[in-house]
Length: 386
Image 1 (cartoon, rainbow, N blue to C red):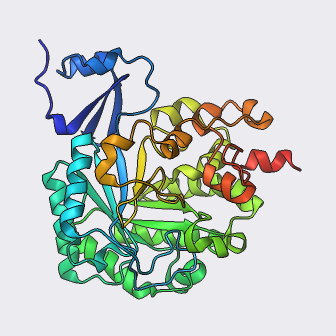
Image 2 (cartoon, rainbow, N blue to C red):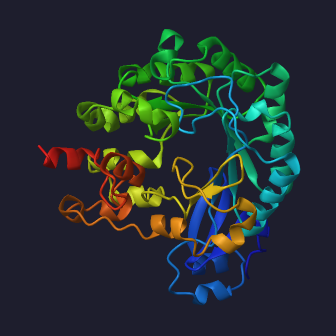
């Protein structure tokens, strides 16, 4: 006897089978057709589409609600400031579109999303649509009441690139006390809370301070982010980027921290070449969903004005998120991410190419002017150059 089908808002058909939201542990499971049947889902016409090589919709959308921000961090990848933004009704229409497409998570950011008085209202609306809202904030406009309201989010991460005096080592803006106070209030309110930490040359030796602080506060994770050469960060990128020695040492450092402290250690997809350089289990990486750049497939970026891009860090944008159904399958900027094929001797000889796929194309484009080139900061590429 087949099990009773799950609610359709928690699963989505794909040509290979489907994607199912899992609650414990929280995550998304990519399952084949047979397992979909065992879960009680009837066969889908989509299963006959053997030629499809990308998803029917992103699983997660990074939605910048505003460009406004009380800070002026030098490493800001969105070049936060003033700019056009959608009103409340327009964002709700966009969330309706994402929900109909089968998106699972929407990550609200900015700028500083809580500069908008309707941020909590929008998160609640996302919940009502079947979307799981998450948030990233710098914490500087938080109140205790706002922290309580943040229970609507699946998780809230506060940007923190260092502890105490080390907080300004990368950003050179803001106040550690305000960001730290937001963390305390969120934990007090029972919100699943984490830290977003940009890894740069100037704070590399202090990453343990961030992990230890997260452990003391009882946070759920620390997400280590690679400094991106986009937005305002382009002007300081060469001063703040990791040295080759730091890039090579990153994985052993994070592995040590993961074993020493309780919060989960997460890294963004642009760090995959730095992990692969240490030859981890390829099977384990595939099981954990480590699959190179997910832009224009797993992920979609939405700017405050509603324009979209394959990756929220990519400078080019087009269309409007409310027209996603007409744009998703065939729009050239999205296809460019999906069809990228790195053909470099070092990459061709690397057994991790199927999971790394040549690294992050943002770095290839910014540093080499070639979207199709391998990530020039991949430790193995660096070493072949001698």
